Amino acid sequence: MSTAARILAVVSVILFSTAGVLLAGPSVAEDALPHGRALTDASRPLATLSASTLPPLPSEFSQSRVLDEARMAGQRLQVWQVSGLMSAERALARVASSWQGLPDARVLEHRHGSWLVLSRLSSGRLEILQLRAGALRTEGFLSVWGGAPTSGQPPIARLIPQGFRSGSLLQTTEGARRVWSTSAEVDEPIASARQRLDRHLRALDFVPSVLSDEVGDASIVRYVARDRALTVLARGAGPLTQFVLTLSETQP
Image (cartoon, rainbow, N blue to C red; front, side, top):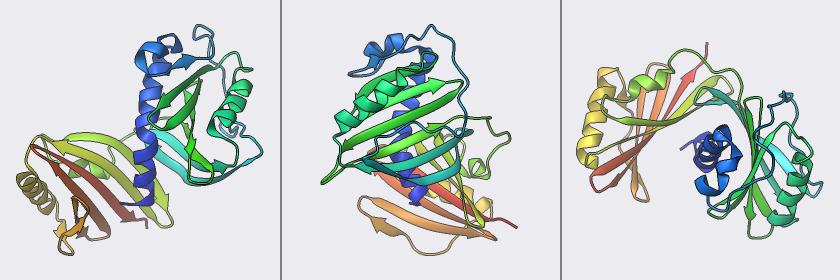
């Protein structure tokens, strides 16, 4: 799985669950999310926030961009990895204090598993700071999601057979390559599900490049088709099979 896909797996669940609550209004946070707390009034109008403005972090924290100009569900996604010596609780409280000073934004604080999460929605742009305690430092991610939706169907969408359920889509650019990652699942045992996906890919001129690899309880098959490369990770759970597909294409 690519680095971008691994980051997507960490941030997407929190991103989408939080977006749903904030779009509905943070007054329902206590019911929709465990340990949810609305920090601002949802009835106030949203304000325009400059795309170049990043949520402030305490000076004890460092940040490095790990996803730039990516696309997820048709929206622009940027992600920074952050870490610092301050506790997650203190860091989140300090950022929350500054966000509460912006009366036209919707702000929500909640827990998601081991993550402490602070979210802000303003003018269709969602910012999420998620922190947790690491071995020596507090660590986490700062995600900024929003912008004009992309039009047209991504090429990886054609690779999902009919009857499979598609999940989140991530699009990134890595040097001269464009990379798309998506998940899919089907109510079918892994052997027959892999055969059905393999037949579908071969009909689209993809052929296996190497034999299957095993990584834990998952298998990996790599396919090629002209200037495109595809990695398929499959994991079976009884009658359900889950896939992660990563397609890369060299730009002219």
